[in-house]
Image (cartoon, rainbow, N blue to C red; front, top):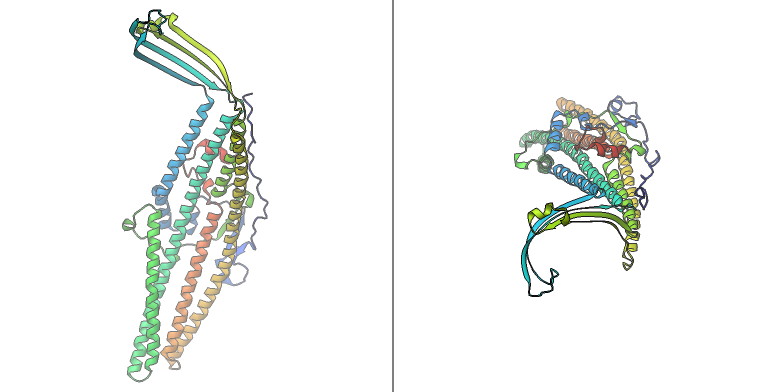
Length: 486
């Protein structure tokens, strides 16, 4: 009967079919015959493996070193690891309930007893004596209906939940560092470009001011350039502010006070756009994303709670035994005549609890339904994120190509205007306008590049971050790894 366990045996939710999300094409931005587009195209590898060190695809040693430092020093990860260890110990403690419990005790006491207490007819008789005692007892819960085993199952499920929560933190931390580094790289490029615009506008203003001085140009032309120069300078400070915020965020993510953090000075041209991007099939995604696995662990815990509630309605059986000795002196404990022992079995069953136990059973079943709905919601969110990432990458490639085309056109127009200025057939105002248009397109190209790099990193996170391909990202036990492969 010890093999019985009431309540449902847990079964993993069915994996979805492969139509949960789709890729419009196998190439992001590769639908044109333009050479630049082909060079910028990213290939989607269906059912491709997500490497654990996916951030290395950007080929930045500074980024790799920063992530390595964060994984070692992040307080968020440190707290998660400690909670994971605590959850492991809770499982170990729970499993001890399946074993016999043996206790031993010994003591000595000074007692004063009347004759009546000692069985002497004389009530006036008073005796004071020492009493020595030694006792060993054992008990064993038969767990016939599996309540204890369901409790252990629930504790194990909560351990899985804690593990996947920490893994989700691990994946998110890496992604946050990568996207923040990309953001800083884009801001550095935007600051450099804006400074070039300021320098260009200042040079043009100096020339036009000289022309106004000699009567070749009117003051309105100079005023127009001064206004634009002032606006461009004003736009520089918000960019610097955003860069400082990005650098401070990198410091916090790596577990370093901002005042002690050295700015890595990321630059967009130093990062490599990954040429191949993996796309996991949906059936694999639900076995890889930590947030989905954490939601599944909660379903498992809720399933075990139903068994606990069912077992609480049934009798509980246990056996026990004890052996003790008592004496008026320490030497009496060696005399077998002072030995006392008992052995027996006991049973207990609820007869009336005011409907409490059945209400707990109904609550457990409702909670199970709720966790299933949460699991489905988490899964749908994950599929949506992957679909959004794939669609964004396709759009990003086209947007970048369009911005690059616009920048090339602006460059050609600027070259034409410069030639006309040298020939005397165009004014410096025309040159200023052409330069401004060209610099603006460079800013837009930078924004488009940053967006594409960021969305590439986001796809790796949406696919689960590849933690399952790491040797042991969180010092996971063999038992933990086995539970993942079931």
